[in-house]
Image (cartoon, rainbow, N blue to C red):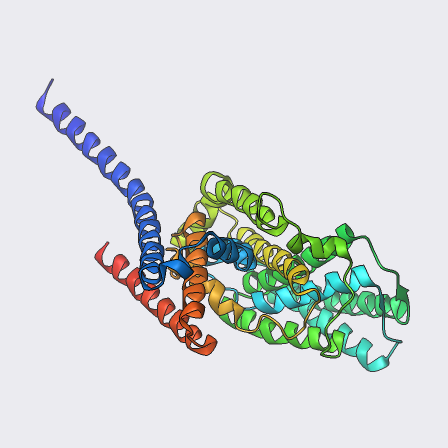
Length: 404
């Protein structure tokens, strides 16, 4: 074999080795992040176990952590998808409240308020702005001229206003009979998905920062829930819904097993499906992903829909635990959910994270809170711990990127 051929062969082998090493780096980094979260969980167990083994290291403690943290785990599943795309969803707690109220109203029956011109105008304007802006933004991103985009967006706004106004006029004053539990649960989950779709469309069609959009929906959705209920809880939930938390199968409520099934579905989707590969690609380098043919806007929107659906499911689950839908509940939960995902090794800069890591993060916070409660630490001080953990986890993630 001639010298040039030997050089080419050596160079080709070296390039293949470098490519293989480059592909292994994200995997090794993800494994390292999960290992770090697992070490943190073990440290929490060891510290509180050493402090009071008779109180902390009991089967009841582990069961209680699972029983009272499954809603965090469910919401963290959707948040993981969003954060891996380098996004954020601050509206998750408000979506939980809205979904819970929607489910409760569906299963207990509700009387829709009488027709009011002011309400109709507000609803029509909101729908018109959303339809018009999203349509115009979508067309502009596709290279459509500004004049045509504005014209089509205006037409979409008018159509949205007319349809929503007529719909409100038709249903105003009607009484909705109580629905079966499965229908109420479906409505609650679908409500969360609709808010997720709203977030995703605004973010992708108008190229708005996810932080700003979801911060707006955080307040807007919360205000809507309080308005719908008059700031009063929705009580009288049927036993079939309450049994989702109160019943027991193999020592755990059905909600815990629903969470396990959700995780077993979401983990392969994230790590082994086309959607998962696109999610990681978008978070790693959105521009490169777009150049490679990935429909960035579509998949980012899907991720926010997933986050909305999981938040909706978490809200419905909490109805069964609280025996009512409380519109002012879950304030501050978005902090805990984001903390769990970040602690689990998902990078706030996007492109990295694992589903198992997020669940370990939820368990770590659950055991931390349980230990703090046993130690008599105030709930407000526990929030300080969680906030400090978020900053620490973000700092560690940043150092890992700088060193990598």
